[in-house]
Length: 630
Image (cartoon, rainbow, N blue to C red; front, side, top):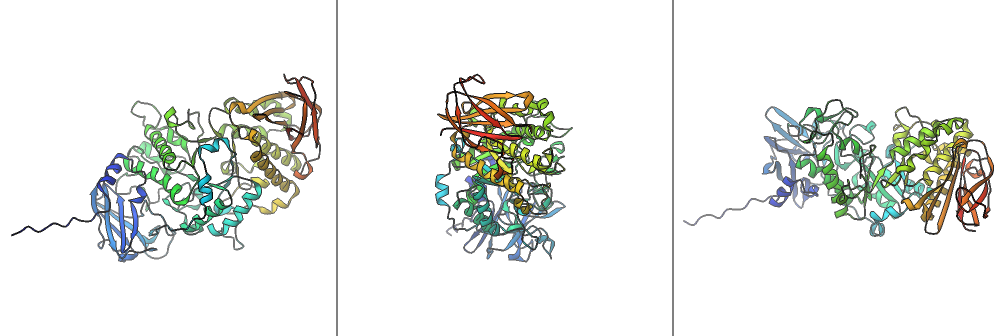
């Protein structure tokens, strides 16, 4: 008898997929794992190498774990096809390993339902089948964005927590779609080039601000559907505003339905109990040595860039990834007996390489607080491969200095000047972020000494120094009008403050500083040749420096005391006309009106080691911006 032909069983994960998965180089694994809708159902695939049985449960089978078992395909992955599964249906994975039984959310879920759903407990934090279809209208923006080119362009970032920027009359947060036009108008009016969102990935605990992630591929349900977030980003892009999101690969939430103990083993987290738990945040730490974890994290970075048109990722808590002893007394050294986390460093490098390889128009930012070398250097030059690093040293020093009473500032002058020693060792962003206005630190306004007028004057000085200092700029929401109370995620910003003359004046100053920054190539040149000392008068708490690019020259003169300095001479390289571009003591900013207010002629009188000089009035607790030209 002739032999019967064998029908080859249809598969979802190919041998090639599994090969790259094993290598830790399946960098777009979101295209293969998770729930994927087809014409007549959906494919499901999950990584659970230690499970004995895996099934998919959901709306399509009455949450019955016996209906749709997954088949093990190799490399620890499981898959199955569910006929009739359709868009909008919810699902989870039912996982068994010995006596361990759990209903887990899909790590690759692109949408998740609210965590506190009523009814059957398996529905909490369930994944939702969604093809992520959206018609974008931002092609002009996408065509002109240039990640590496940003090094020689202005970047001024407005940092936003979506839930507390504004509230509706019913004291609830705006949705993604509701916030879109209002935020685009506000940011455009202020002149910022980018918006940075605190993490938008799904998180069960609102009070974590998104930093304790449970759904890495799903935008939080709190403000709408994934397509609504796309609408928000699309709106900003059409207004010429870039979008940065905070990304959290350093640790994950311990909610039992999420990644923790996923297949009955320490799968995503470290096996080593001394390395598994993060003492600062009560979270679990990824085991970066596992190929599946590497696939997951690198793919997640690329996912947000590809599917949501994100322009940059600001990577959270990089320092905690770099060192195995970070914030812990007991820790396990690396294979060389040292403290560096070699696996995490490799993941960081490989992820940055993948980002720039697949999406050359974007960039990455490290929130890194140590002296680790080469954070913003390319990987081929032994760096980590980020484009930028937050300058935490500048932030800490300048806020400490500004909190001093002016009479004592001369004893702390080094806090104002030390950052210039290392200002060009990395590509820096100067952050006045949400971290500086929480956990009992008070507001930036609170840290300024003196009465209300002096607080406002000092606040203007802080802003002027940030825009004059080398490095890109970042302000947290509310800083544009000097929010007076500490940020609380449960309440909106106090927008009424902007109607107060002193606070409204600060808003006007932010607008004018952003305009100056975007117009002046001298302020984008963050190379050593783009900055130079002019003079410092320690006993009088005066600081003068020059920003330059080619023949363009801008002087910043800062008077950190309430004493006006008349007939003050500033050295320049040649005589000719200069003019006062900005004076933070001008009445429109809430100042007292002391200053020059016009053209200033440089004459051939040597000063500060230069052959010519200007004679100006330095207003009290104020800065001047002087520009060469008529």
